Length: 362
Length: 182
Image (cartoon, rainbow over all chains, first blue to last red; front, top):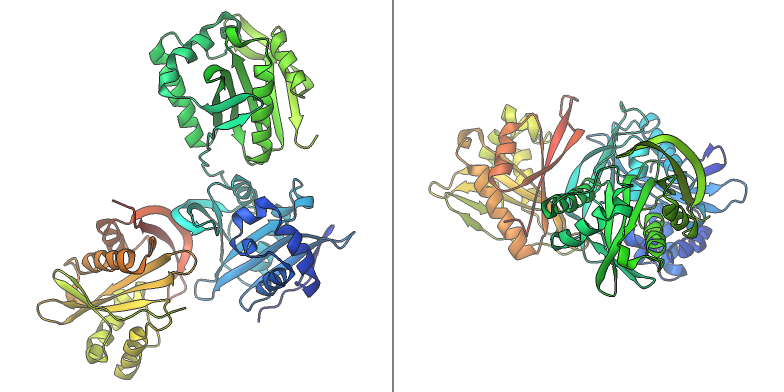
């Protein structure tokens, strides 16, 4: 039986699991995000199930810690090494953070502590880390902690929902630096979202005409650093590029529909899953203005960035003279953060921009 | 975990049969071949007795976690290799891994490719497996050709994941085939 030693790391205590941890496990089992990615947690529906889950942490062949907040003694996270292979001196790492302790880099600290123990005390040469492709938060932890992206295992892991998910395979070698590793390409979904009287949906090929109309409207084109498309073919290429950038993991862009007709656009661009921020942008067709379409669409997209992409900051920039965009930002709760000088090159030359920002949970 | 019943699978020029101690001498020759020792060693097989014991272990499918076949030439009946569906997880993930060896007297004839194709069809069709992984050391290109011919997609490169008998570490290719591929 491999020992699970107590480790103190600043405000955290890594300790072996105890019977009384079952109550906190029961709390975790009610958290949807945790249940989604942890098959074993889906089976926990009562205190007995939680006790069985704790017992699993203490099984032979696992080095698994309960990570506690030292000040309060509360359970904050779980991190563990398992699937030890003596021959190749390798293991796998797994982790979860309790809801009240998220958004403060705790998973990365837990992983760093556990993997360091694996290399330095247990003599491991290689630690693998698996996560569903649809779980970008876990990808960010892997990257931050120096686990290099090695490939995508197709249809490899059932999280208990009966679906075999594609899985990112990361690994860190004892000889690798502690991080960050190069970010893996995470294809981004563009889901259909109905909210606040709007439908956000992916742009389609046959939207080229309305996409062209939107971007060539003078009140939009003036602020477009890319320059408006000229023909429907240009518009089609721009739409294809949005899809490509979703696959590459940088952009989520939606057509915004009101009553079944396209009224505008909202997008999250330059998704940074490591530092957890993104830039938002939007435009509205002339016929649909004055009804809060941009504000509502931006609010929905921002909620998606926080809740589904697990980002921390959504920022947006607009030229100082674009006062309509400034009003949308303010109405959607984006604080004015800075005035960036000469940061945007438009047809009329370099212009100053406002940068607005919304921080998660604020 | 329930065991897997013995079956025989015909695959053109080769046949996959449940392991038998009758071919222990050929098994010993295959396992002592330097190329086998390099990539797929079985260190505890050192003589005819230990080879027989290994054959018996291979024939025991009662645990349900592996199904190891001996591969025979369909015409002459001689042992030409072995192939194993292992890490079988029917309960949770419906996944398995595949590994194989070819006797030095039978190499270069497509034996492993034919065996991998046959065991995959059986795993998908009869066992309900949905994904089969095939890892091999990057420096073992013969195995890579087998994977490609048998339709296993290259999904990634696992760095330093294979540790050879001499302690050197090698990158591995991770190939996999899904029941829905092609």
